[in-house]
Length: 534
Image (cartoon, rainbow, N blue to C red; front, side, top):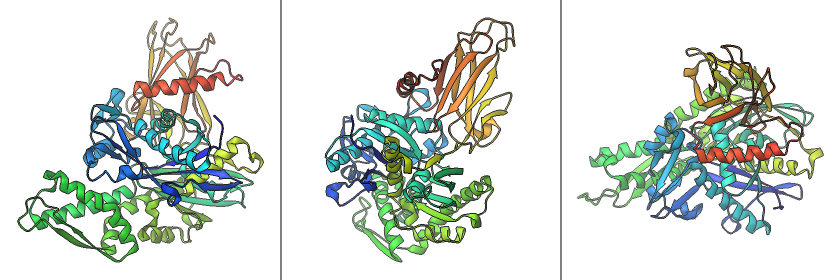
């Protein structure tokens, strides 16, 4: 299929699509052209069928909390055993269960869905709006991800696009897309900081521009830190206040908890615009002799008090990211703010205080990422390739293999320029060994206990040889999407080795999708006929 190429910001709370028309980024309108944000929410029926996506689905969060899925980006590509998933189990009203290979599944009615499938429904909605607005179909996209997304999260995002029937041309980091939207790379040499605080994730990225080259120096972040955490802090305060006033345990009354949770985002937005907000919830407490009405006065000072510990965590990440770039805040020439949570006055004040300069203005913070993705999408199309800046992104996490004890042998360091590849030699530990298993980790330390077990690679069908006499050369390659490809050969015979790469958190079905994608890429790469992708 032909047609325009879209840039899609697949966000935790909202999803936005953009396209380039007449050389200018244009955000795809939704809901009759009056809005641009698609809530990343899917509502299911009692039997598990999809009933609505986006705005209509969001309206069902209160009446049907167990069948309305939101903020799924927080657990996409996560293992079920990951601490972030444990937090999600406590916070989300919809059921989350363990799938195959330590993956995450949602059980809705009679059906089970992976986070990737839920995300694919949101992507399909974005494509539907684009078709309606553009008057022609398209299935080619560039999708953005947080800069600190790991291997499984990036693959899962690619899979979501595949499940939506899309040709995902590229995965681009959200801060890099934001810098593109502001035209950096076409300007004079500058050092740029991108402070990206969205609904569920935070990224801090330092870039340097020179002669149309946009070079990422360092990146850091937390994929479970964002505006949703402020919402949860407000919810905890409301729960405390209700329990104190009515003498009940809110956790024993799901309807009360869901009603309070439905108010938190609106309260955050209202307190970001007003000094004081009064809320009245009629008949909140069932069976209460006083009628069960609940009212509370909230102030912007209280919001700041609740949000300050969360915002402070973002600047701890800023400190580390600047240090990794060997820079200080005063060395930054321009600051870009991205994400809906940056609309909070507290965040704006703290960013100004930290960097000592006003952030760039002119583009809505929630729209800038999709616009940058559209610019990259168009450049991949070749329409104005000569004017397109060159992107040099980096590895968000170090990649290594497990060694003796707690030691981790780092193969690819954090913040290395993509694409990057490294080769390592593995041997047999005993005579006639036919299989070698290698555990692969991602993280920032050189200890396994400080890193995340990404998965396991198995080399099988090895030729029989005395202990230590095999020399299997394994090449690890992180492509421009930050996705890992592995191939191996017997260094002595030149024979390619069979590899199985099991990424934890991705079910067998997900990994089969990646095999199909990688096989297609291999077939299209005549320059390297010996290449085998795991």
